[in-house]
Length: 392
Image (tube, rainbow, N blue to C red; front, side, top):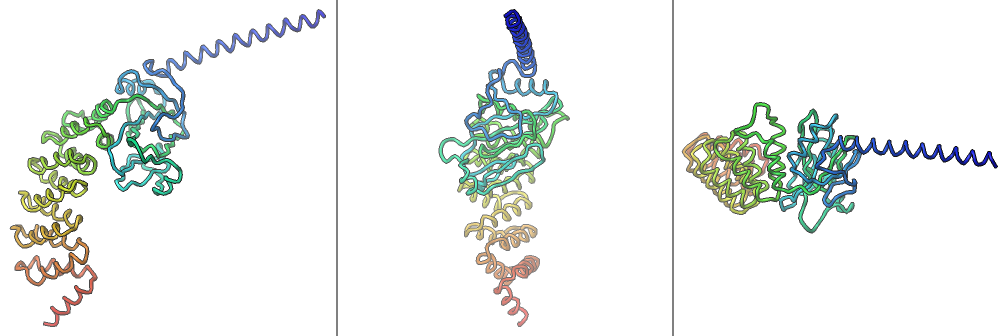
């Protein structure tokens, strides 16, 4: 009896000591976590939030943003002892485009697994594969994931991804933020773009990644930021890159800015990029804008580039403008570029027009150029034409 009582007392002592140790350990862990993360962002569960991509091979934490996004990124970067990823989603521009590992595809290809710790490494699935997996949303606003890699106390990479992507974080810590406002996201990203006021420490590659992310935001503040990026005071490389995204992603608002650039930008190189941007725009009026550039730009180089991109659009209007340049443009180099543009048209459109130029144009350089491209076409009509010429 005495032995049993002593045993009970001993067990209570051991159990009490264990509970004390467990309590101290829990307190220690809580204090450690409070120092490891910004106080403004209390830890939440790692359950997937709406629009969040599937994240694997990661130490995932989900947190609600309660302060500013810029302050949160800065604080996480300052406290991180090793590289980590931080991400959130915003509404994406309408359309069929998809984004994976920082690459934007306008043809709607779905993304497979994006390995964030491997440069440009992505597995692309077909749309049908993604549809079978049930990952493509057919209704409601489309989302875009914005991803920051934080290392050495700063943002070292920015990537974008569609929610149907699977993100492999390479075993790193991954902080997923909820409650990020699109306009604030755009404002933070614009700070990484190399503008006229950028410091010498600006990262050109990081700036390109940030510009892509800004262009794909659905929020109208994106158009206002991009308008600033194409003002004549900005660096030429920034105006060129922004012009592409105005055509590829920004619809009517982007087309309006491109039309202003076509008329007012002082750089022929920038205006050449504007011609290309018109060619990738889905706005119907962009074709007429290209035709105007091919007819009327002060630079022969720009007129030639506009003709080239017109040829990629094909169609009767494009072919007529190209033929008109061959006949009427005062610059021989533009005429030569126009002949090349004819060679880029579908053969049923281009070959007969090349034959007509080779037969009838008064400029021997132009006729020579037309014959060269006819020789490259391997078209039976071109062979008949050469036989006719040689038989004279």
